[in-house]
Length: 266
Image 1: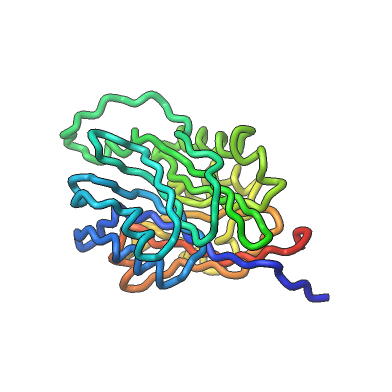
Image 2: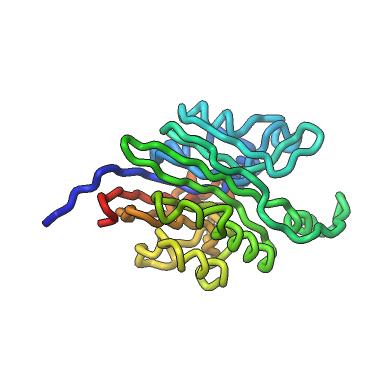
């Protein structure tokens, strides 16, 4: 007997690189156009700026949300002298913020502001996660956005924290849950395997493994952006859109997944 879904939802995760495209231009509206192409219901965004000098003092999450007519919550991860950098969630549905805090990190080492190795500063960047509860018709869903460390040991501790009693272990087996973001982890990593022990990996349904890669956008080499899920959700389709606009708008490609809700986890 065919069982019809009781609700559907489309989600996207996207590291937008401060809305700075590979042409060097900072254009939040271009990121909004990428999102608009696929009409998602929930969007997890990483690497957004608010009032930063290097990105023209724009309020990037506000500009993107306004263009898309979506609700938005921005969470600063770094705040220095009125400049903010962080992650955000966009939603077409009402939502409640359940948790939004820093993830575990090791002591920060001293890195000169004008380091000859600029990449070093990103190794010690604070990391954060946002957890919201979303109401979709008669259904309630947990939706989590995160951006994890570049350091493997620190990433593992952050994933253990997300899976612990204070985070997803509290509710995720009672309420359908989607966890997504830039994990800076590939499928062979220990952290990824820990997540897969509790959640399904949306991209597992993509037969071509090379099409799952998201970084770097013109020539994707690494699979670091993921969508995980559990509860009475079924993946209907997953894609990593690779077109002219997505290749130039950021250094990451977005990941999009369509889910259906089924009564009783069918």
